[in-house]
Image (cartoon, rainbow, N blue to C red; front, side, top):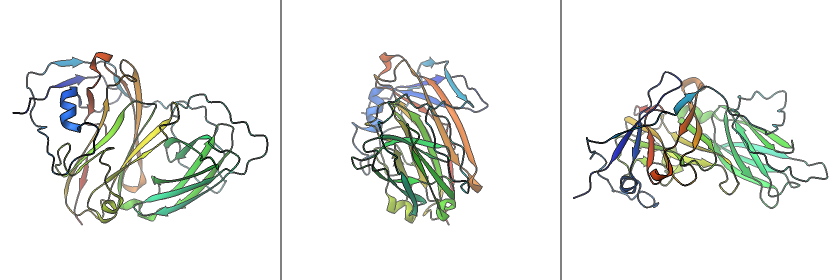
Length: 329
């Protein structure tokens, strides 16, 4: 018989009028729930409903949602006067050495709309090989690096129909690219972004899916672009270069609401594992949710992680992101 999972409810104080359900799961329960780092196995349905009703309450007082913006030292190149950009949050970017560039650098970028309301972003900066940069788009920011030939080619989920991308290097060089994304209205889209190795993740459980089963979409089971295009399921895209120290990261969940093949609810949660990097630390994240009409809902989260004796546990925030209601068309 499977062991009963230990779940600890965490009580926190909030900086605005919103209820955040917060749960800490033990490492044994987390292994049952997430597996050993392997991708979700088709048909696997862990016994996630078994809860010890005598669970102790762990009182953590430093959970706060705030409206403050993060600071940044990144110099953002000015966009063309004809370009209207969305405001970007000031996520903290660590001090990094400026690249040594002795000659004028021609930096160019192109943006092209592709399937599933995504944008192919292509950068050419031949005199800045292997250099760190930040990519800004309608409030979303993440860190990337150029290749050894000074190029970057990535696919980014659009957050605005008139999609503008600003690419900024620490020495003030950069480029602006824009494109129109007609399909954006066909998708529900949420973003979670943070700095450093915090362990934050978006988990989407589609239409009653249990953890580890089909329909549980997260970093280790991110879904498929073809399924997102045809309406069978959503998908998660991870942005940011983990090889860069103290980088900015973003995770984007998208669901094809117009092409949906079934009706129901998608339960969204934000989760993080207590690890040797974040234990006992205060970590921050920001959520961005694209609502009807292209309006953006933004929330900043500040969370005090339990001490290092809790390593291996998962912190689960059930109500930071709004669950999605899907109607079959």
